[in-house]
Length: 247
Ligand code: BV8
Ligand code: ZN
Image (cartoon, rainbow, N blue to C red; front, side, top):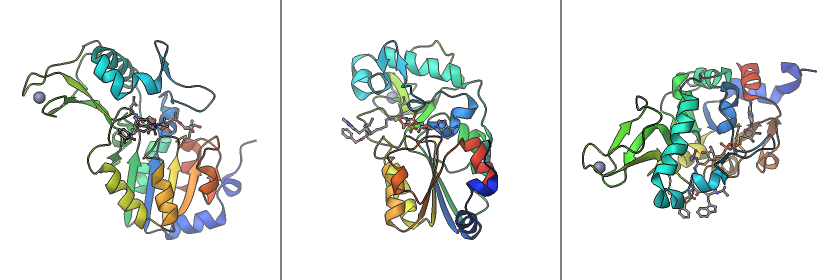
């Protein structure tokens, strides 16, 4: 039986949502699930590509060993993503941007769907699947137009190979991205954690920082996660349905 908005959204959360001045939202793959983007974990499955678990094919080691294999994996995913649209969860978060005096959206996703829904100034902790970066001079290029079956392009500036501009396992996050997100988490009064299994660091530390700084932390996820016990409220359900209940 579908819980009603009244049952799911506590009076406390509704009051805080009305009163909040500074809101931070951290999203993971689950916020894009209702757009048709496969999640990596949760729901009893983990992403596997040609027999390699996600953490292996999307790793610094694999990039060193076999850049074409990493391109093939990312080209495949860009092919899947190209036809997908933002869902009501992305749209609700985009609306929230102008609802509060200060609003920060931090995402672990690389799919660009938050920006497609209208979110601005998104902190992309793990980069973007729609950008390539030169392995030598770090020149970046938009790869939206790139035909999906192309291999690695050569850098237009220095002719070195390009790579996906995405943070792989074992790689540092984009310079300053985590620090910027952590700074915003330290000053927010309401923090939503939407659609993340909260196992990848340092991204999963963001809600912990918000909590330690006194924010009210709300998790939105059909499943419990290692973060659930730290949250003030856990709204069990789909982001596309729950976020609409808040407005
Ligand atoms: C780093 C881009 C410092 C790539 C990603 C050994 C050596 C080196 C590092 C480590 C190590 N051991 C551990 C680490 C740290 C490592 C890490 O945390 N590993 C984990 C697996 C233990 N972290 C790193 O390597 C990071 N860098 O630490 O740098 C350093 C540097 C060098 C040496 C040492 C240290 C870099 C991490 C970034 C990796 N790149 N993505 C790509 O996409 O191919 S991470 C990847 O996981 C995605 O970005 C994803 O966003 C992220 C987290 O996953 P989620 O977003 O949470 O998605 P998931 O599928 O897991 O969960 C979905 C959730 O949604 C579920 O809970 C589900 O219930 C829920 N859901 C489903 N449907 C819905 C829903 N929710 C709401 N509504 C729905 N409808
Ligand atoms: Zn270059």
